[in-house]
Length: 342
Image (cartoon, rainbow, N blue to C red; front, top):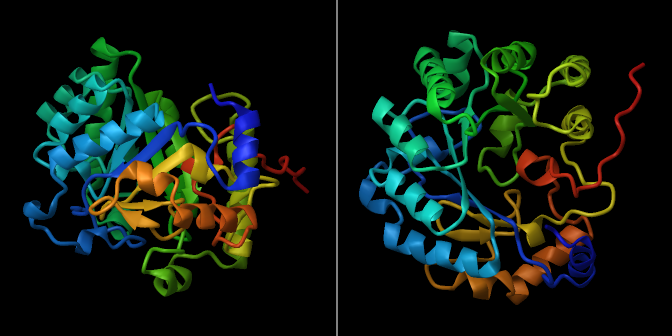
């Protein structure tokens, strides 16, 4: 259980005095999708560029020493790795709670079955629309295949793995505002969780494109606000929307301000270990790496002077700010109350 007193001391000194709980680990840069807000699909398609499983095991060992409990593997698209099942089993056998985040198109029926049989706890599937034309426009994938795989996973869960945590992850842009409620109803029909977060531009390499083509204008932000309050109202009768109401209420604020900072504290650089596809260790997804695991150990980077400097920047709210759900949706993060709708 997280020690909030130690977390507070960490924040005030920029030195970790408590153990991180979650690691986000991009184990591949390659991707078969074509998401308009991401550059991963343009990366080298050569499998020889993938981080070796031996290096991944070394990093997992370091994460265990730091005290990490849960590891979320993503990419790129993890299921383009030929050894992804071995990686998931390795992490599970080391005692981690294991989550894998996928676009839902690259795994076969055999992959799905073996993933579940490996004993991992959580599977997240990215889906931004249930309109086939729009889905292909936003993510460059075939919706029928993704939906079919989601529904197969639901069937496998109901057959023999009832504790499996299935979630849909939705990135909000100006292109899918009218899809947000239908996606919630789709998740409710399947009895799976759904989480929303706004598209981000900082650190993507696509800043101008995202702001010009995917960022909502004032009227669209008003439309998002109405949808958000409808989702919050739905939470009174359904329990599958995974965002805190306070988090959902900040999504229009984020779009208007182009940034967001929690009310008092952002603890991300103490509770989350962020490892990108180049083995860069980041204070959070919106900030650049403090170093790389190709020439430094994780233990060294976690307490490095550069990381301490970045923690100070976060404390002073001089970072880009963000509303990433993996960081800001957590219960220990203080958020403003949900405003009364006028």
